[in-house]
Length: 228
Image (cartoon, rainbow, N blue to C red; front, top):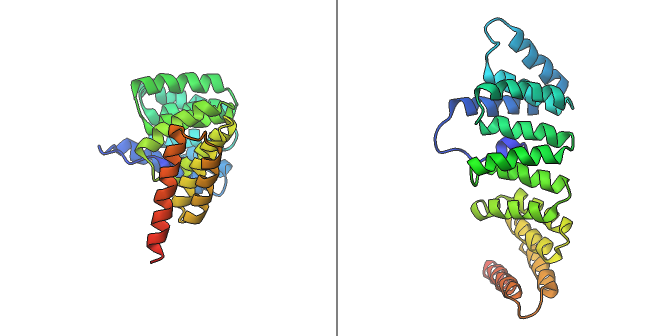
């Protein structure tokens, strides 16, 4: 699934954002990134289209998908000169650093942006990817848990959390995340199995053990009710 499709819809209509998402999707569905580069480059070179922000953003995304992060960054810097607070441009700029495994630059840019936009989904989601790829499982897990408090029905976030917990060597967390993913995918038996494994590994009599036991009982009860 493309990241554009994962972003929650904004309550306030934003005409430019609509065209930016559309440009990203055009790149996603192009036959190849190179073809998308050629399309947007030709469009921008046509008379009257030089200032089209969505087309320039499309070119940046196409360059990034084509493995040309430096060229993508050049286009994004042009866009940010006139739109320094546009979150979509900032996140994409961070993705150019992420593509080159420059985690510190990506992290610095996104942390600064998150301070100005607390709780923002695209920024937080991208930060979780930065930390996962940088091998910082606990940081990635913290960001993902922040997102899941508001978006508990997004199954891909639970899958990403399981990966992050694995990096952090939190085996109980891995099982719990996999259980929630299984529930969302309509597989309560797998969820119950994962919760039992989490229960076995959590310290007995701990608050965590109690939370897991309550969730296991809830899932078991739900399964029994569905079989009546």
